[in-house]
Image (tube, rainbow, N blue to C red; front, side, top):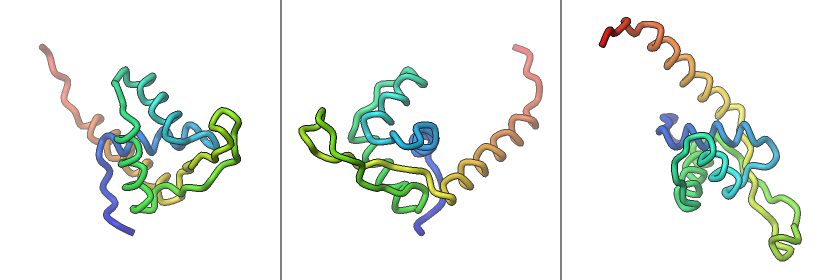
Length: 107
């Protein structure tokens, strides 16, 4: 397994794979991230993040069934792995801990 550090966008993609369960492929991942973050996302950035996450062992890909809307072509779907879920939990725990340490700022 390659390095275990998650960048911000990789974390968003990983979270989205977990949210979409059996419907996580590049188009639905990009659409959900755009919806939740109100950021414009390109499919190439999603593909790059998915390749990195798969190299790190955080997601697993598999071929879904053929669909009429894709001219009978199959989709590459992604699911979060146990290591990916553990990494997300670690990132969340670290952020929660640091937020709890944050002093009350008065601006």
